[in-house]
Length: 575
Image (cartoon, rainbow, N blue to C red; front, side):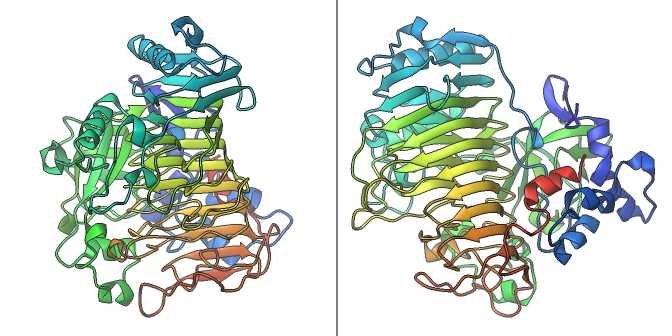
């Protein structure tokens, strides 16, 4: 209850106190022109006194934000990102299976993947619970799939339990080609040797891959028009917690729905994601075919309350809802919920890193069509790609590390992944030199992904990667980075940045500006508390003409900016 959450009808929901208290009530007061009272909970200005006005330098933009937290033009509201809208504690589910009872042996030579997968299946059939992997090294010659709700795979700690993976996804499943043909390997940005995805989605993925077909990876798969419309939605503004619907008969508290917004012929939805104005209006959208393939924008969200035709969500609207975008709530691929992986190291057999875009699929942990899932205390070593979020939302990755011989994408976040939290993360320095023809990215976000947060990170290599596809409203905060990676992205994927990217308290150890200081690149962005940096190596130009309406504050300073961590401070606004 301390986080304002309770189980409503067997599902996670927001309590009345959590929904109407604190900053949310203040937003309602502001909208009606009323006056906040003590009964409404602490106002944003009061919260700012505890969250921001401590020893240090408080930027003007933070004081502005506390007065307008849900609709600020440059800083997104990400205080509800992560598992159960930012719950401080992950659940501890009771142990229902020990992999040793299913034949697993910690001898480093027995293939334990069948035993682990049998234990996971047994836990799933039992309705959920924890599958325990004791200390030791467990060899796996196949991937581990978690496709059941409320199932947790738990080791004894990342320093005590190791899964040693001997084979890659190309060997195990097949060649996963690009949707645009050619010889690119989609294992460069998808799939994991620990793969969390709902069973129905998993089955269709494997079938498509084995048929060398492209399996669309979003929340509605290849046949978007076949999903049921639950109701249409009346106009609403970004930052609103509630919408009015035409028919609420299929809606209830706790249900996970998909808010879908289609673009119009003039691409006003894409312009809105970019902040609007002359620059986005003058941009050429029609030839960005990869970008337009990501539309409609699909935002999964859990319903907190239904009262008549008024539906309240567990987090505020990420965008305006306008009639020209045919707004509706729909069904979707059945999500994996309440599942996680904890306390282990996944180490792949050490092989040379593959040439760029030819990764064989020695990948770490991937979440796909997952909602309210998590990883905690996980190390991946010698992987092609570390941690993946593919059409995954409201997940928390906590205390994760990418280590070993070097990777292509240490973290990737794509195909409409929203509201995720990656905190206390580490990218270690590679243990061998990078082979010629390989490439390093970093913490990636792309493909209309929005409201994702990277918080409290140590990056000995890599960069703040955008692979284009108009990601928007994402935050990187309280991170130390040796900025030596490069971003990627096809020209047909469109802009590097949409509106409301925020980089807050970033320590760049090698002084390279690229993708750190973004006031000259990203529209309606905020760069706050970055040390002095200069342009060298990969240098970008803005995608949009004219004024970017970006903000740069406390440039040349780090660690004295208050609040130090933007995500933590936004969470305090609700306490």
